[in-house]
Every structure is written in structure tokens, then in C-alpha cells.
Length: 283
Length: 282
Image (cartoon, rainbow over all chains, first blue to last red; front, side, top):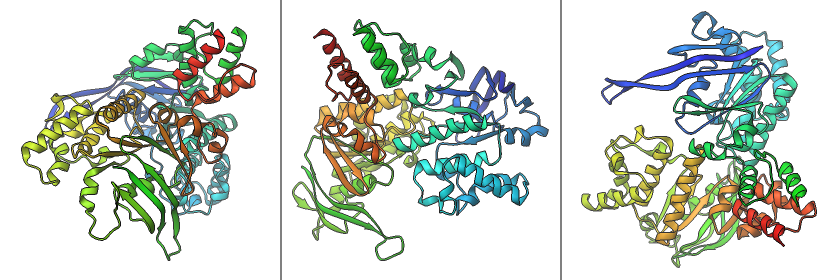
């Protein structure tokens, strides 16, 4: 079952000068084919301005293609009749938690989404409770969101999306503004959601360590998909990644450095345990 | 020209229901030319602390000496202090506002009362230091990429020629290359100008790579203050307060636990690689 699929997706917008005159066209996404199955965990990597956020915004029809097609849960996002169905299928979480939280009490904030969908009150309360439980924030249900840490706020934002029961969550750099603990909390939460609720997860990030558990990763550069594969396949191409202004996890870099110095270590090492094992064997 | 804090305490909203002690008895000294990292979880007091360095926040009690003079003394020249201690806030590109890059960077020196020529000279020097080429000078700052915007914003502070540069998470939201570019530029500046650099960051890997001293903040208190190797040796305690050591430090500990004869104090990929190679050749 396909969750998100695009075919030759193009997104162009007009470039304007200060007076608002059109001075040209900019192609932010240029002929992208992606194919994401229901329940998958997919990472999208790419430097600032590579087109990855623009692509992500197509997944819940914040933007619609100017060329090609995007289907979310089988629905063409260009079809205005499908807009609300698309938005309900794919929920989005953004970088800055402070821009996404609107309620004065945590549970109110989480209930906002389902309320807008016209869900009956009893059902809203049930969903609020379930969602807060799923992100481990139930004990904060009566707190004020602005007293929470960054990681906690981001988990509340995720609960708000979950409460709408989407089949897919798209997270656009959800950890960029968080401290190490906040980052871990958010990633752990997302992975649990995927396991327990079988939600499709699409994660955009600049932290390479966060994608090692992904089923597949796409790398974008100037609007194109330039690399596609499992994290192991992608992270074993260190030099190519650097060319696209990206990086590899520190453990992968260390393994690569040791390999170049002549130690027998397989390429594409992603975890501490793998490197430790490889070194113990060659010792 | 050191910065010296003695028993600094700071209380937010004293006497109200929101009263919160953000800094508790902070004493430390930073010498001219040091490259210091400050780490701590969200809400640990890092940002409050750095805003004391240029007098933006005044301590509830305690003393802060810049170049030997207590900045809380009556008649102290606060304006001069702010010229000397340049603060780059989080997401500094949100503060860009001028019609072109050069004018934006000129804004600081213009406020210092310098002539137009001097302002431009300093602005060009600063833009050179952050590695922003001349072709961008007359472009709108809003047309630059994320990393370029941030560099333009940092240049705006450098143009005031501060003796101390304080950066609050200068790489947040940048891609890996943009992150390395900015930090490499800062390191270059530090090496070539004897400027004191104070870097607040959530990336332990970055901190380990660039700074020579780390101050760890936790719940308003100074928890550790030492060389990266010393501080990251306390990785278990760091984890308890929401921090961590760089990934390579964990690798070294794991190797040691498996019986390999390695020292566990590496904090960068290069150090770890060297230590592992040494153990293989011994």
C-alpha cells in the first residue's frame, strides 16, 4: 500500500523584485519521484535550499505541484475536493514548537485538531488522552505549554497531530531547536508511534544520527533526488554526501577514517556496537 | 581584558508568583583570547549568563569585572562595554533589516559614531572575515541563503570590532556544511585576531572540536568548568542533566569495556582514530 507517491513532481514559483514585478521563475522541486509505503520510516536529507521542505509541504497540500503529480494515500493533492482528506491523511510537525502551540493548556492544544475535524466531544477527549499517552506527556495534560521544555513542547505538537489520526506524519526538522535530550525524546517518540500505531513517518533533518533506523533515505540537491537507498547504502558514500553539503554520523566517519588508515572494517557502519564489533574482530 | 564574574545571582520576576532564580552564585573568569564553550539543557541558564557579559541583564547580586572594572559601578560606560562584547543571538538573521548587505553590516559602526568611510571599511573587513564575497554586498540580505544570512548577521557584530564575541547557537538549523563553514570561520577569527570567543551550543560534537574549555550549566549553577577531555569524562553525570558526550567518547568507552587497550578521553574523530591506531600498532 502506497502512502506517499510522486511522479515527476515540479514546483515552480515566480521570483519578484521589490516592486513586485515578476523577474523570473524559480524551480524549487524539479522532477522528483518518490515512493513511500504505508508504515515506512523515511528520511529526507539535503542542504538548506535543496528543496526538501518544499517537497514536504506537498505531502499535506500546503503546496500543490505546478507540474507532475503527488498522491497521498491514493488521493491526488491537486484535486480541491480531496484537500481535507489529504490533510487528514498526512499531519505535519514543524521546526519551531512555539509557532505550533496555540492552546493555553496542553490538553486543549491537543484537542484543537480533532475539534476542527468535527469529532464528537467524547471522542475528542479519548483521542487527547490517547495521543498524550503515546508521546509520554499525559501527566502534563493540565499544564501551560509555555512552561514546558523544547522537547516536551515538540511532543505536544506531535500529540496534536496524532489526535487527528493521520496515517502519516511529516516532520520538518523537528529537533533543530532542541538540546540533546529534547532531540532524543522526540526521535524516540516518533519511533514508538510508528511501532505502536503503524504510522508512516517522514523525517526531514540535518542530524544524520537521527536517520540510521530509517527504512530508506532520499538525498536532495537543487530540487532533485540525487541519492536514494537505505541509510547504510547512503552513509557508505561519505565523499558524495559531503559534496551535497551533508555529513555522516560520527561513528561512520570514524570507521571510514580507520578504514583509510588500513584497518579492515566494512563500510557503512552506523552504530557504535557495529564499530566495536568490527574492531574487536580485526584486533 | 578578562571577564570576571564573582558570585553572580540573577532572579527573574522577584516578588511575583513567577519568581525564578536563573543563576546561582556563578563565579568564573575568562581570559582574553580564550575559546570557551557553554553547554547546558534548555532552561539551564546559559542564555541568561551570556546576557550578563555585555550588561544586557544586570545581576541581582554579585560583581562582574570587565578589564578589571566592575561594570555595576556608578558611572561605568555601558556603551563602551557593548562595543567591546559583541553578542550574536540565536537566529541572528531575523535581525537583518537594511536594503542591502553592506548597509546592514554598517549599522553597528554607524551607531558607534564612525564616518561613512570608516563604517564601510569595517563592514567590508567583517564581511571578509565571515567569508561573504563582494558580489553580495549590494544584494538584499533577504535574498541570501540561510547560511549566508547568518554570516551577514555575524559580520554586523564583528564590524564593531569587539574584543569578545559571544555566539548563542550560531549553527542551529544550518545544514552540516553551513555549520562547518561558520565554525571554521569563527575558529579562523579566533586564531588570527586574539578575540575571545564564547560559543553556546547544543552540539557536543561541535563543542569538542573547537573549544579549549567548556563551562557546563545546570539549573542556574556552574556544574563543570574545564578542558573538553575533563568535562566529557563525566559523561554519565552529563546525561543526567540532559547532555551527552560526543559519540566518539562512547565508542572509546565501549572498546575499553570489550578489553581493548585504549584511553577513553578522545572527544573528536581524529583523536579517536589516532588512539585506536596506536592500540593496534602497540
